[in-house]
Image (tube, rainbow, N blue to C red):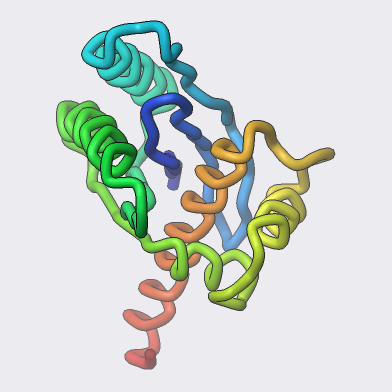
Length: 167
């Protein structure tokens, strides 16, 4: 199965495409979409939509996993990220792909086994699980790969549960 993981944003959208086969993760492609603060916000949203559509068209994932939003303080940022996330979801929907959403706690647990892991621990485990020479940069890219791994792990658990009936 090919999984596209997305770390949503409007300045930087991290993405990572992995294959999950025989309980093994293989990185296919990863990177980030950057938009400039000097651009009108609506143009930034269009860039995100177009770039994600292009990535989906090229790598043809079977599923897309995306991080759920969580904000404590900055409501202006939350609204802008939510708008960018909406455009991201629309791009995915246009390709009729299944969308799976995961909280930061779920991602941390899936990648490190510990829901309160520090960001660097998640990034390091992502690097190790994908057998990469270095931690992907920017951080949003590493986060997107971790989100894809989270979904792959979720699939593994679903498969085990269907086979055995156990949770």
